[in-house]
Image 1 (cartoon, rainbow, N blue to C red):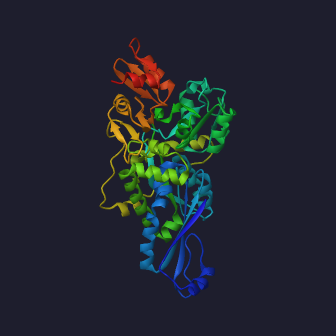
Image 2: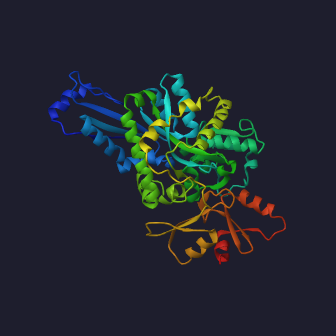
Image 3: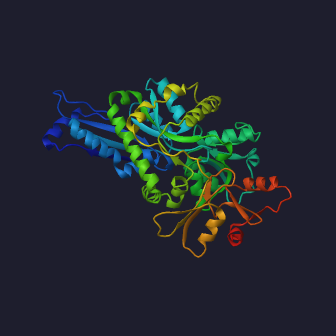
Length: 455
């Protein structure tokens, strides 16, 4: 998908025709007489990777970047255009950036490292300038299997066909999780390197036994009844995030435009945090994803936390990702400290209040009733189940009792222990909890039974 928006002071048609041959993309130049010029800013984004929306889908729909550039254009006498280019993964964005054809891009943590490595190798260095969405435990990535599959845990993947996108954050989760389970990620499974949509089709067709992918593919497949969660990435307890990268040459040539982008991203972040339901509806309309799935990740208590800050724990996690990519021979090495450039964001954030950090409080359940402009929050899954009785529920979300990962209440695995009800993303998580309780009365129950037990 390619969309271009122009914002500029009005100019006579004849003058624009004269200037047309002089315009170049990704920057543009003044004419020979120093007259008005056109600057095209090319932004690569992933519309369906929905925890990048504050630098992509939502930002584009709100028009905040264009508004910032329009104000700049009036002062500078410049025509600014934004060329939004939509991709399925981060890899093609990196290819276009290193070819000098995309100025600003958003992608996940593992692709960001590849972006840094390729930029250095091809003498088109890039810099990480902000974060979009993050999860401090790694819950943005999930391994799923078919609804009727007999696979119950990660250990059951030994010798199986597993689809993922090599070099993605989801692949990184798979590699680490398999190693923890005592399985060689290269020899212990048959890894299928596939685009997310291809992998989803392979899972449904039975040509893949499991799928390891990033937001929003696992949630979408589970919501549609086409998959069940096998492994919650938050079990790794390692941060994962998506961020914004910029060509260093572009940032040096047009620092004000980069500032405009980051300022617009902050505005989009403010909007999403203030109006999570409206933001989810907007992203759903733009992408075709169910709004209920978007809200699972991007909601008020969603799996992703939106904050552009380059938090130290995220940068440290990025450094821990480097050896995984080196082992896969996808990079030689990456100087993370040299790649991270906090100065532009600090410039535009001066005087602004910091966003609250994720994990500050207890994860909360949420109930989204039909027609409501906001979702209602609850301190416990049982309280949510009680509140849902007799209501026309659009979506109900409950946090995993151990990892805190939010999940669909009717797709979660429930454990009853006396009067207590706990929800889990995976069956193995629920079973592990019950086993740890030893001789207690803890038992796995169906969603319908849990709803009936809520009191």
